[in-house]
Image (tube, rainbow, N blue to C red; front, side, top):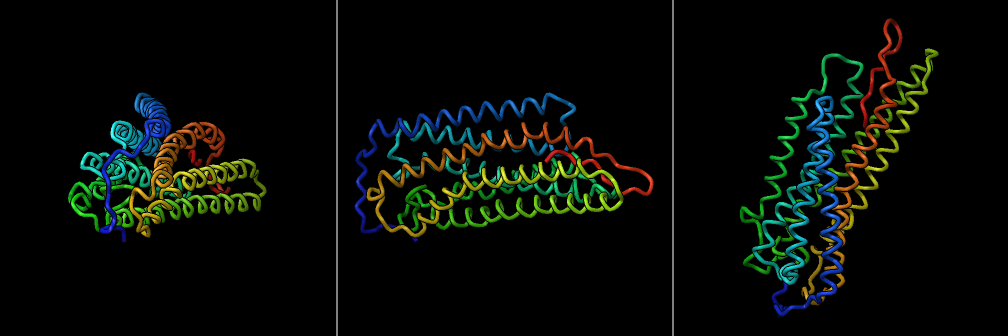
Length: 322
């Protein structure tokens, strides 16, 4: 674990103003753009009664989580520009914004997982009438997501931090402790990658099975083929966006856990990498509205053609947008 008792940490200013502005201004800009995008999504869904559906409740909450992430990122960027040394040596001023940033990222992950599960249930249960995902279910999922996110994200504010000790101190995300970062990062990265993989692959498998059943009964399968292609494309976009956005941060935490160098020995390369990972996380907040909202209209229009045949024909209920 980290800790550098033999390292004489010099608290003189080491950041150049040019490097601070070169890293800070793009971060601020991207965060502002993300705030605008997600505010637009939230306003559109809230102001339109026709969009108050279970899946769009989750979309709206995802946009709110991304808005929270962008706002926290903006806060951290301002602190970085005004006092960049605090992001190396750590300070109490960085504890709250880092905790809220962690909370918002966890909420985003939980919402992405919830959307994948809701889509799976909507497709898997579409031939049954005993269970339907309702708006109450979506609101309950939203509440649970935020309770979990605040609990895990605010643990440093409750005392799990390294403000007053160097042993186990994170070099990249001081004053967080390395064991806290590992506790938060590893299981949530597994959840973020495995659960969406399972849900979207399951949706594709269900669509293929129904397509083959309809084909065996001599029915047209073009709509199911189109839906299958759209789901596959959407899931690929989700995976690539998640991978590009969070894999560098995950790598940074692993590096933090195995590093024994002094902070000044890592300057500036490691800290430039750290700031770039923050930009990539914000890019995820920009990509989510595009994938889940803009693509929803196109996919929804194609999937509306799926109707439930009556009689002895194979039931193929409408599948909502993924």
